[in-house]
Image 1 (cartoon, helix red, strand yellow):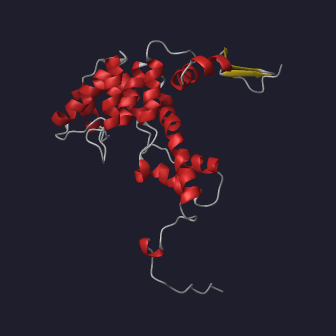
Image 2 (tube, rainbow, N blue to C red):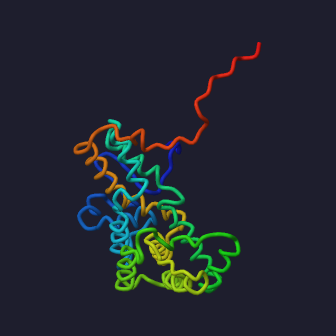
Image 3 (cartoon, one colour):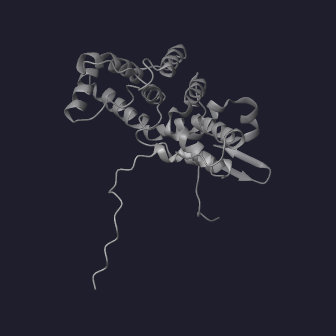
Length: 254
């Protein structure tokens, strides 16, 4: 047998599909999507209410209208006459460090602080001394972020909230004291805390945002393709030119 590809995630043979060893038909019949996302990302089915928590996380990420650059990217690309999957891929490609990317650095920060026993005040003070922002806190539109609020309520109801979530809540309170300005925990910060308490690798943080938001991307792509005009672009008078004035090309030296 060739080892050209090697994976522990799934196995497909004639008439059989196994996901981490479990038959797909059994998972389809008995498990939620949240359970299966846990299985795919961690290798085992969840315990307790972790599957429900993941499901809630995915729903909280599903949509944020055209106030997000990734949804705008979907619309622009969808208006160009491409297939739906290309437009959705454009949205996924627009997820980066400043849009949907705070989960990973926030999770790393929380894990390091909890492991070291660092207080919330010291975490923020250390970041300020390094000229860094507190990832996962603050939002241009929401104060508080309703998505973070409901996820925290569910995490406590499901007995999932633990040390990392507690520290995240302490960080929110400490922003008033250390920064002098209240920075509410946003959905990225809340998800970062929860995936740490569920023992996920922080490096997989963006996966939750991508999986949840892809459904919204598909809806935006389809709406743009079926209900909006094609070739969506800024009007000429919406574009501000900041280059040099019109000028002649100099003659080439002989």
